[in-house]
Length: 236
Ligand code: HEC
Image (cartoon, rainbow, N blue to C red):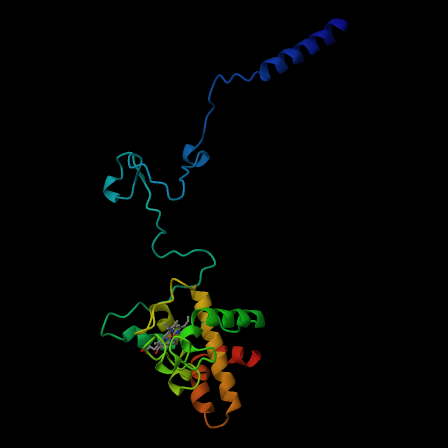
């Protein structure tokens, strides 16, 4: 009996001793090594040209194809669909005209978003278009300012009050004559928010002076964007 339990304890002790050794005798097996050890790339680091290539012609020479570009036709999760109108070639205005029909991508701003839209307008646009959107900001100052070109009178000129949101988005995205592009300064969501703010201001003005100007100033919003009109109604 004694002998038997001694044998058991000895066996366990030996097994433990052997299995606790930290000397690795074999590296072990890895199934799909590319997945176990991913090829980490440092951001902005130069890719080793001996290993990586972005030339399809060098494929099959033991090199790894890597372009760092998203696959064509794909988009990031959560992104809105890209604006489908490219910048017109000089002398052409097909896309500028086509953008009129493009609907508002961010209608119905909440009260908080509308406040942020106003802030974005004041930061980015009011210097030219004016705090009251009258096209007479500090840079223009009735023609006495340093900016020679008259900015659009966003509130008070029927032409801009009837301008569809899609076309405004086109001009703010690509620029228009003396006004530069805002695509790199403000995100497309912010551009839509600013346009919602402009439309709300235009509608607010129309309410004050009914009925003479109400047709001009709201027709654009009504016909082309039902959603914008809803946003305007909820905005005080
Ligand atoms: C540097 C001055 C300047 C700034 C800043 C500026 N604009 Fe303009 N904007 C102009 C001028 C000038 C025009 C008139 C362009 C023309 O029709 O020749 C214009 C025209 C427009 C138009 C009418 C475009 C069209 O298709 O006729 C819209 C809409 C507009 N601006 C919106 C904005 C918004 C929104 C911002 C802020 C993100 C902004 N602008 C910032 C100078 C400016």
